[in-house]
Length: 347
Image 1 (cartoon, rainbow, N blue to C red):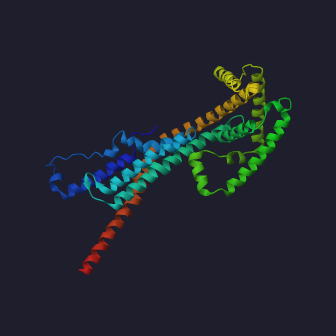
Image 2: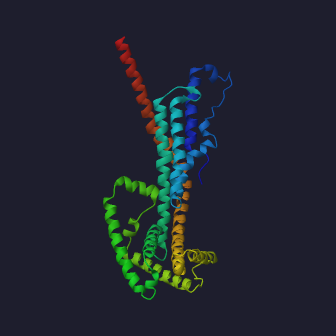
């Protein structure tokens, strides 16, 4: 997905090219080719070290299905970026020559080409993939379906389903009263939430209850109703020790293991089938959530693969070369001139 050579690497090459040209201008013998020249190889541009530069992009892409790992993968990239920025500030190739403009330029490049824009591409891909879910029967995005499933799991876990087996309408009444209250609260929280919290949740946490709150209420109720009916239908088969048609053989075997596990615990032994049924229903709903997350993750990887090279080229050739670098080096020249003028005046 990710191109093996990006502008974050070519940028190091660009610094080398600039320095090489300066050497040739200052040393006629080099420009005339009378001495052999060695091409400078940036140690931070060699594998496997260079691979650290991509871990934050991978972290952003997999944060849907593995949020903790997604967070962790940002750390190697941040360490790499820090090392790269400091190296470009401190060194002119192999020579120690601190240059604030050079370091600042590299910091701006890494921020744009390695952090902000790639992460934005991943999130955009995930959002597009999520919206694709609304073309299905439910008319709801994958994100909204995911939030409804999460709410359904929590509601189910707090209740004894046996109590409602012969009175499913009562379960639905309680469910939708609670759901509507939750949607109203989520809508209020969306309007008053701390902007920084919204931003961090948007990128890393993937908890978006507002997706459900902002969806059409009738569609949310229809999707939830279908899920409740399916849940009680599956539960009825499980209580009879029959494999539900919605279950795979491995899922039904897992249910049998749950029954044995609860039967071995004196606290749950009497109701081991009931507890096992609730546990496997939770797993079943969680599996649906993971499928939705996987779809969004794939969308993020596709977007990253398509966007990474154009992003690097745009940042390098447009933002950096046309706007950032000219102004940075103009400022540096102005500072040097001001310093010389002040020194000459004092002399």
